[in-house]
Length: 314
Picture 1: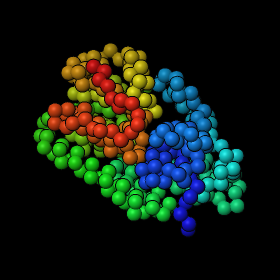
Picture 2: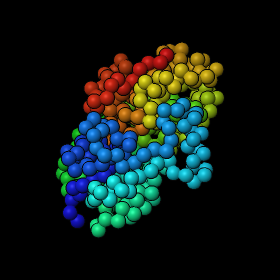
Picture 3: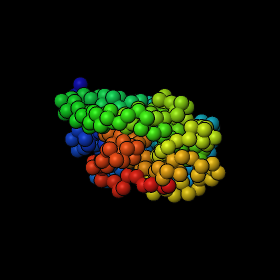
Picture 4: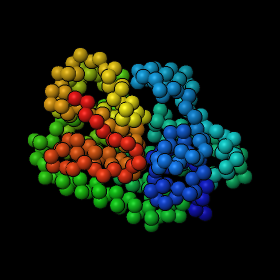
């Protein structure tokens, strides 16, 4: 099979991986959410969202649940654009029906595009950091850039190893109880790769936090855990949006948390970092390690062109 030369990326993390591998010039279209590096904002958009993401977290959750329960898609794909661009590779995901367009919808759209040589579809489904490095290799193989992909993955892996070495010097009793909040209303704790990041960064999560997937919980459960650090990283929200949304939080027990008393409540840019399973997950690990251990671990020099990545809320 010839290396892919006309690529449609329907996943922001995949777009970032393509550029990290030096393959940005092969990208002919991206998803409506792809925004890094900034030059991708000039690329044609192959998807649209059917949910207004400017609404509050509670309104977004209600709209998502309503569409899912009625069998309506959350996203649409521009079949006419696919037909026009004639990609030979479409990269998507098969992990989450809420985060991005569903895999089955992508397969259907590629078939409907009706080009003489239908594009190959590569579906990523990362659950952990090593899966992200394997995604780099998978994309590299599809594009004839295996050696580059391995080198890039190894460079990111070495950054992870540096954090692990620094954290290993911190005694277990100095590793704070930490709650990673992926949605504010209703409250959701972060799963997937996030518990792994927390462990590597030197934090301790609650027993109800799962490495399988993010899931809803209650503020009563979080209060019982009484975290020493709380980090708000809502999926799809940038830093300012997270700070604004935090102002709507009305749980009366929040200020009684140890984290609130000790000034260790933070907002981070979850959209750019923690929720995006691409190269910037390593940036996310470095941010997290610094927030948990500011005296021992220096703030990272971020690779993104985005603005500030975190802010103290309390």
